[in-house]
Image 1 (cartoon, rainbow, N blue to C red):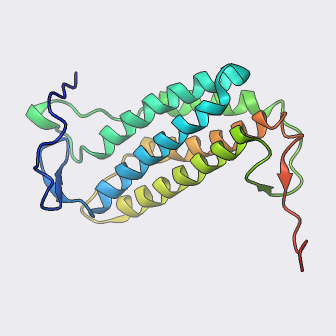
Image 2 (image 1 turned 30 degrees about the vertical axis):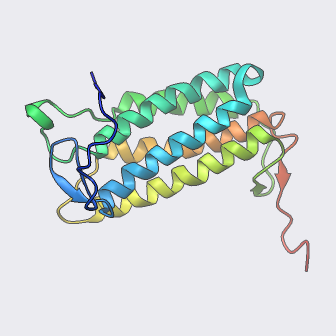
Length: 193
């Protein structure tokens, strides 16, 4: 359990932060950027949920689960190696979390009208907010892939799969809240030439 009695600690005032294993890294470190961007995607999902709510209760419930999982992902990324602080086993994203999200994507995608063009973010406030969250999740994924490519860093394969599925889900959810794709705003190549 996390206990936060004091919000400011002054330990980051010199531009470093502690990972979950106690190791200090500069705040511009790629690992810190990766889990910080996961947190940003989570905040965007929170904003999107202001527009999903009871109108899209099934999607909102999945978004709630994703938000919790994104905290798991942040903890995963914030704990390199095999041991967390005080010798605890680190929290990791599991294949079951990826599988659950794939089932959610498949269930929503069944109802969608076929896609015949790329989609412009918009159509409804909920869809626009979900598309914004999707682009931030994609940025988090790019940072995680870059981190995983470094010789002395590791990112679990399930973590990479999960963030990829999050952005896939957000895309499908955006289409679902746009009247199952019927109100999507389609890209028209060269329309304004």
